[in-house]
Length: 407
Image 1: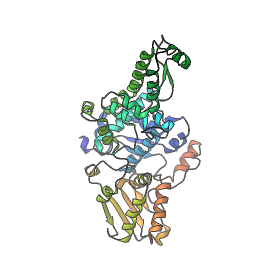
Image 2 (image 1 turned 120 degrees about the vertical axis):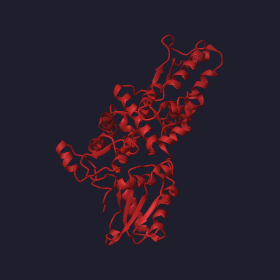
Image 3 (image 1 turned 180 degrees about the vertical axis):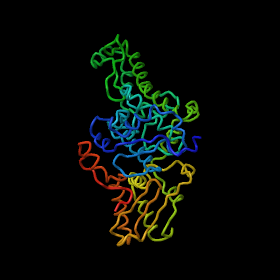
Image 4 (image 1 turned 30 degrees about the vertical axis):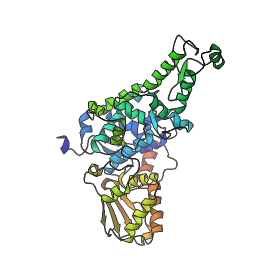
C-alpha cells in the first residue's frame, strides 16, 4: 500500500552543479531542473505518499535522508525559482518599476513556452500538489492573479492593476483621448502592447498605428491579450497539479485559499513553534531557554526563515498544528561541549533537532546562533573537494560549513 511506503524514488542531486548555475543562464544545472528531469515522467503514485515523495542523495554530502534532505531539496528549488536562475518566473511590472502593490511577487513567465520549460511548469504543479497533500508549505511569493487563474477564475482589469499599475494608466489614456484625429497623429503609437515581461506584442496584422477609428479595438485587443497571456503556463501547472490532487476541486476555493494551502504563511509565528517545542537537558523555564526565545523574537522574518531552514530544512512552518503530524521541535542542551562558549550549535534537520552547549550569556548565544543560520547551510560538504576534482572544476567561495555537527 502507498501508506506503508516511506518515500518515492531516490534522487541523486548535485549541488556543486547547481551552485555554478547561479549568475548564469545554465538553468539545466539547477536542483529544480535536475529533479524535474528525474520525476516528470514518474508514476503519479509516488506523489501520493503521505510524507516524502522522494528521497535525496546529495552528491558529495554525507547525509542519510530521513526527511531533512527532502525538505532541503524543496527549499533549494523555491530559492532557485525566485533567484532568476530559472526562466519560469518574472518579477511583477510593479516590482520592476517600484510602484503599486505586489512589488515583491512573481508571475509565470509568458515567454517560457519551450517543451523543456513546459515540463518545468508541470513539475511546479506537482510540487504544489505535494505541498497541499503533505502540509509542507512552499516558500514562493507568487502574485495573487496567478492563484486566481489556477482555481479557474478569469482575470479582470482590477487584477491587472495589482501587478501592473502603469499599464492600466496607459490604457485609460488612450480610452480617454479626445475624439480628434490630430491627437492620435501627435502621439503616433504602434498598434501593439507591452506584455508582462516588458516585450512589445503586435496586436493586429491589419493595423500598424493607433488612430481614432481603431482606438476602441486597440483597447479591447490590448486588454484581451494581457488578461489571457498566462493561460499556457497556467494550463501546464494545472496538468502537474492533476497528477497529485483532484483538480476539479480547485474550483471550490478562492485564489487566496489555494495560495495558503500551497505556501502557508510567510511569517513564522513563534507561538506555534513554541507549542511544539520539547526540551532535553534543560528546563523549559531556565534562563538559557528564555534567552533562546527572546533572541528569536528579535529576529527579522528572513532570519526566522534562515533559522527554520537550519534546524528543519524548511523556510516556512506548516499551516497549522495538525500539519506538523506529531513532529516536535527538540531543543537539547548538552554539557559535553567544554568550554561551551567555544562551540557552535548543531542541527539535525531530519529530526527537527537543535543541539547546543550551555552558553554562559545571551550575547554569546545570539552570536553563535546568527553565525550558524547564516553560514552553515550545507548538510555536510566533506566530499565536495573530491567531487569537484573528479569533475575537473572548482567552486569559488564554497565553505565547508555543515548543519549537522557544526562547530
